[in-house]
Image (cartoon, rainbow, N blue to C red):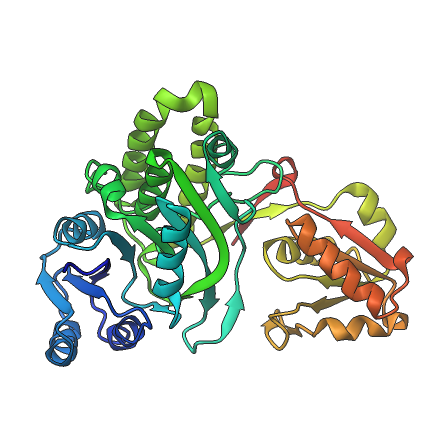
Length: 400
């Protein structure tokens, strides 16, 4: 009997992390798997580590592909897989113990072509540092509902993010779907290769389940490809844009995918600029002039230190709008930004310590939960200001 799920792990110089990665994959509660590791010409001891672990677990298969790139490595993995489903895992990341069990059970329950889960974002020490959430609500998308998904899957104008993140990990795919989606992606794509896989797969699917279950641990590690200077970066992004535009053109009249593609490509260019030049380009959402007038010279709490909160903090610091800024976040308290320690929301229980609190979040449901929490603490409603950034409020900032 063929294994039901094939786990594909591309690897390049992964000796520091591949052991941790394989341990999380091989210890899954769902046992009917095969693990395909494709080494892309590493010059470290990663392959020896895989070989040693494979001696005790015959589900692991190691292949050597010398410097073929991530696109061909993943395609090779799909071509050599025997499972009904495929999952991609990066060699420096890990899976939650019940990840595959959960994803397979949902795929079978709904008959879904793709099940998209959520991912924790961790630093190198394994501490949870949060991360943005997709803007599309959890649920089963099929039939006419697929248009709702397509209309914002790459760029959500209203909520200012991605409807579905441009990553192919944390998702389970039917192999038959990937055999369509991944085979024509140009090997030259080095920026946006994950996005090409997930967005083309979504476009080729007839049903998608979006789940809020956290199944994947994404480690933000210094020195990864997107942060490494590379002269070919802009050419690779051009290849990504040209290929995706060619595919999207046939759907564009109905779904407006080209506009979304341009926004996403701009974000790739910003990443490439930051990696290749001695300055940084930041995307920032500006606070409205009315709100600025209210908080001018006041003691202000920013509640929520994701992208929205950081944008608010940067602008308030640059323009010296407030007399004092306090940062609070449910998940990031204890972290430090510019010497300021992020506090727990419980700080807000004594509202004599501040004049206003800004709820900074893209998601209106998250803002409602934040507001309820503050009301339960007895915070005066008149001190609570809501701010949800929109794409038309975005500005670009150069940091030298």
